[in-house]
View (cartoon, one colour):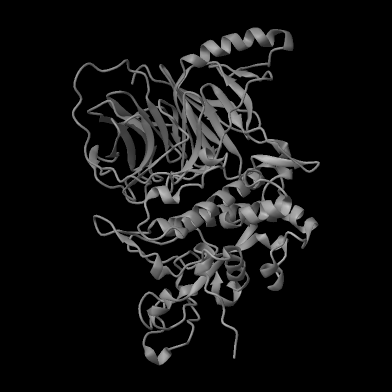
Amino acid sequence: MPTQVPEPTAFFRPPRTSPELAILEAARALRGRSSGEITGVLLTEDNEGTPSPQGALSEVVFGPVRDFRCACGKLVGPEHAGARCPLCHVECIASSARAERWGHVAASGGLVHRALGRLVARCLGWTEEHVWQVAFFQACVEEGEVVPLMPGGDPRMADSGPEQLRRLLSEKGVGADWPAELAAAGFTPRELILDEVPVTPPAQRPLNRMPGGARMPGLDSVRYQELLASNGRLRAMREAGREDVYSDFEHLALQTAFDALCVQLGAEPGAPPEERSVRPGMTFSREARYWLRDDRMDVELFPPPPFEGEAETQRPTGCAFLGQDAALVCFPSVAVILGLDDGQVRATHELPSPVRLVAVSPEGAHALFTFDGELHVLDLRDGTWVTDAPGMSLAAAVERAGSVYLANARVDSTVELVEVRKYLQRQATSPDGRLLWAEDRSGRGGVYSVDTGLRWVDRGGWRLDTPVPKLQADGTVTPAPTEEDFTEDLEHFAKEHGGRTDSAFTLGADGRWRFLDLGLLVVDGAPVRRLAFQGSAGAFDITGERLLIASEDSLFLLEVGQEPRILRRFPLSPV
């Protein structure tokens, strides 16, 4: 009689008795149950919910959406049952297979399951707290001792993370403290660090019908999407031979996404948010409670209220690239579109209230604004306020009732950014609309996914502790001050810093983070230029190679390269 393959459900919801054995057996048997590997980040290809071939809703892996019909329509009908389409590679079978078939994600780095942390601690002779500190790159192992890491990219991160735990467990081997039931099943401590993640059948993760008819994935699928995004980036880094602090940060994002997935799928259906929070007693709980709240607030899009009262001083409140040859500059009462080739005004749109620009759509047709905790979309083609912008991320950080939330009108949800206390100091959206940078006045916060509210990067803060050249408004560069003059120079910088509001960031095509942080141009965590002119708004282009900075009287177009320089300067006084 053939041996029954364990049900992968136990991976996320292990029984109360012998949960470690159930998880490890489910992980070992996963390849036997899996119908294929999931590699793509994209879940659907359109608003109708058409599954992406490589995504977590794939028809290639899980089966067709419609009975006996492949994705492209070449094979239709029961007479083709069991045949696989040579074009779309979808098997012609009943759609009920999508309720039974499982997939898997091959992790690019080791992962620690939250239910296995206690056993890992037991094998290493540590506390469970130390295990999670190392797993989440908050501590490293030096001479057998767990030592805290400095935030923001400590070089010792190479001695931290799940892979370090795997090495230590491999050295320990099977000892007297290894459970007898695991030894009898042939498991070793090394296998406590997992390499594969089950992907549940799509029928267990149905799409949600949204107002207007669009079908959007639920939170279960979004958690898989976050996992796949981090996994793909880490795989690309390692295939390129990158083993540095940036790959460690990506491994941290992968472990964080995996933990969030386990929390999401491990809770019973309908469980309250409290049962999905991090277990008590972990020092990283404040950092890891990305999913703390999912309060459903009103985030529908509607025109802003009319402006009442006197207009503020006409200094720019926001700017953005509109394609390659135009820019949007927003003032308290008007939005202006300027040509970057000649500086001429191409269009103006009245802003009926003191809204704040958050982002523009990739094609430059729509702009997203916030006002009083609400989201508003302006069609830049005719100046009308609309209730949707296809293809655009409609998410922003908003302050409500003393807390900061990521409000996402696209998925009709809000998630509290628990790391950001209140009083937003910096808020910027990446040019592709996928990431949001939000920090409070104390520098708490980070870079978040606009789709899930998960934090990608804890920026950790940077200090101007070494002299850097200063870029003047006329394009000249003042050399970095000498060490003797540096202390006095810092005092001037602190005064300049106090009145700035320009913030922008992007993750460039080369994988390097670029930030404009209140007068500092920062690349890969290191300040490279100080800006002598005071900006009130900033924005990178989609490539990360160009930067806009709007001051009270000028719009600067910069090239961000090895030697940042000013390409053009357009006067805003006539505007």
